[in-house]
Image (cartoon, rainbow, N blue to C red; front, side, top):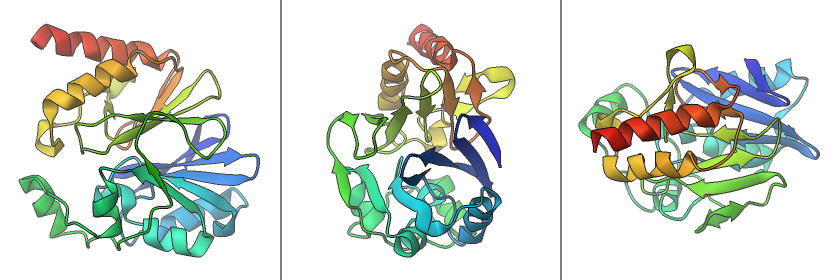
Length: 228
């Protein structure tokens, strides 16, 4: 676990990052990691002298099992409010099976399916969510209902989920095509995120970028445009 911005802690859960954000009335989680790894999250909470009951809200970036794997258990144990986009909600709640790419089907042989979880706040538009200081931005492509969240703190902290990934030496990379539902929509989402203003970006996969992180998104958007 490491602090990537003031009161923003990054926790490695298997091969994915999830984030704990300290807010005035407790804690906000952004995603919950892989199924069966809740103990990792609980240890991280204990390291910060917090408990699961301090979690007030869970912000979901998207439906994939490595991001919602602990959602049902952590939501149940904390009583936290769960926030997700309407287009991904049916998969998260179990009302509809996920549409998996071949590589995701292969991964499913190694990791158990996440338990369906209820969603309390269903997003249908960009803008503020129920947690003060956070705004949601629909960033489809990786999944139809993918959402990135911008926190008004430390010059702006963007929780990118899998709209993009962290690369080496502060670079920002596109999510692999093999894991992306709609590559064209994903490129459009990168361009939209590049229009925001933020100093720090954190990712589901890859290291955080600090110091005018938005410029790295603008670089990626420019490369996408050049490729056509």
